[in-house]
Image (cartoon, rainbow, N blue to C red; front, side):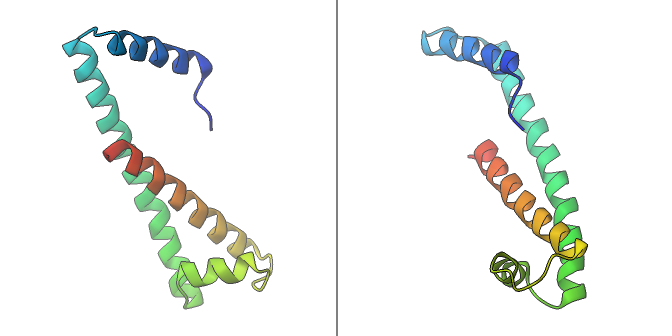
Length: 104
């Protein structure tokens, strides 16, 4: 989901100020707290998703990587389980990407 344009605009204002040399301990502390909270939120979501993925892996006795390759080639069919597993796998990669951005 894309960020609300007003939220993005607010961040652009702060970015402009900071690039122009403006310094603020309040902005620094606030942004650090936001990043920490978002990082924890994403870690929790990712943990929940990985738990669901592990159940599918155990049930179908294959790794998600093996499943996903076969699913993408159309070899697994379109059962509700497989569509959910595929979605969870995609979401896990997106969350891992977001986590990497927040923790770099």
